[in-house]
Every structure is written in structure tokens, then in C-alpha cells.
Amino acid sequence: MTEELGDRWILGLRGSQVVSVSEGAGHQGLVLMLDCEARLAVQGPAFLTYGAASAPGAYPLSDEEWQTLVGAMIVSAIAFKSGALRAVFSTGHHLNIKGGGPGLAVRVQKPDEFEWSYREGAGVMKVFGATTS
Image (tube, rainbow, N blue to C red; front, side):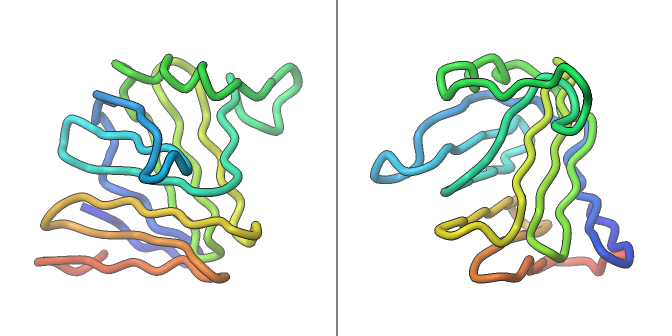
């Protein structure tokens, strides 16, 4: 279940495990599939770091290193109304997406619960079957 706060939504993905990381359609972007049937698709600039992106010693990982997320659990997943997205994994990796980048499209879908997307300057949440709190 999602929780809406003033500038963000806390996505109900805590404890979900990453089961696969693959290229998006047409070899564009990346898609993370979770064991709860949720799907996170990113087209455009996304940064995977070990540690928080702003922390001393954090470094971005190469595209090949995204596979290290397979088996990791989500510790925190937050979608911002500005279009930014932050996910923290049990491995210590942080996925950071800043809204506003050219060509950026992001979608997080959890069947029958919610769909959050970012495109053209806005983060939009659709909740199915329940309301956000």
C-alpha cells in the first residue's frame, strides 16, 4: 500500500525482492522485476550507486553491475511529486532518478495496487482499489 505525504509517495515495496534486471523494450532503459509482481521501468538517466549518491565515497555503477541487484530486497522506495525516485536495497545500493531530465520516463507498477509514472515534468500516482493515506 502506498502512503502519500506532502511532496512524495512511500511506495509499498519494502521487503520485496528483485528477481530480474533486464533491458527495456527496444534495448532502451532498464526493467527491474520484483517478487511481488511489481515492475520498475526506467528510460533515461538513472544512477545506481553503492551508498547514498551524496555520501562521500559513493560511486556510480556500470550498466553491467545492475545485475548485482538480483536477489536484493528493497529497504525503501520513495517516488517524489517532482518526478524523482529513490530506492534503497539491502545490498547498500541506491537507485536515484532525478525528475526533469530530457528523455526521462519512469514507471513503477504494482498490479491491482498502484502505478506511479514520470514523464514530461510531473510525477503522477494512480491508486487502484484503495486510497492513499
